[in-house]
Length: 174
Picture (cartoon, rainbow, N blue to C red):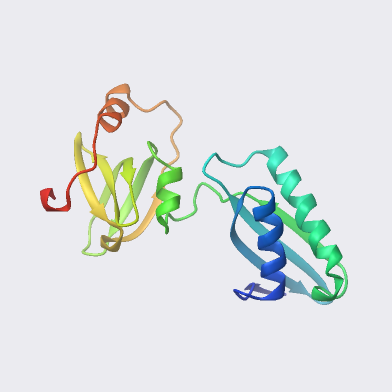
């Protein structure tokens, strides 16, 4: 069994991306897993408003129809798996940060050390984190890895209020 990401720009990736975007979602990743003559096509989707079970069904039907119309792309039987990104997905793009605003994150720094904080405003260059009661602006380039922490309680109201009232900090203030 071999697992590989679909080649960017491949015909399969193009067909799947078109079907996903046609339903209003973004294609986060596409993998093809081959086991003998069978294939598993794994499609991960996302959006700014999240992904629900009905959304998964809608996207699955659209992708299945699109692939079936282009039968030559996947010769033989295949299984289609459509899902949303897991909570343990690393935050690697600005849109990942934006979609997780107000959530708690654990971030390893390139320079060593770690930050744990709540996600505030973010843009294409970096993110504002609320760490230990203080707002801190961090450039994405300073982060080695960041993952959302699972919380089983509502965030403290004081933290949410601090982030709601926070305006974008200038880089020089850091």
